[in-house]
Image 1: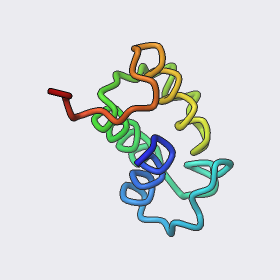
Image 2: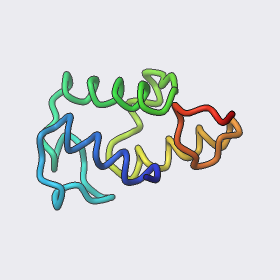
Image 3: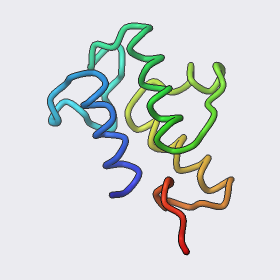
Amino acid sequence: MGVEEKIKEIVIEQLGVNPEQVTLEASFTDDLGADSLGAMELIMALEEEFGLEISQDDAEKIITVGDAIQYVIKRKEEEGGGEEEGGEEEV
């Protein structure tokens, strides 16, 4: 599963929304109904899933599903991971 699919899955699970609502342009607060606590929990879920630490400044810039996908891909590329899934080590 790629980054985009995994993030969409996390959004659906965390916010309890229908899959068809989760588009790249969907705003977490305006379109998907996240309050400040829901947005914070979503950021924490992304940190855990992708092994990232997302600063408060960066978190405030992640407004849409597309923003989250771009952010995670960029961070993983900076860390040399590309779009590979985290969590499993190659032997």
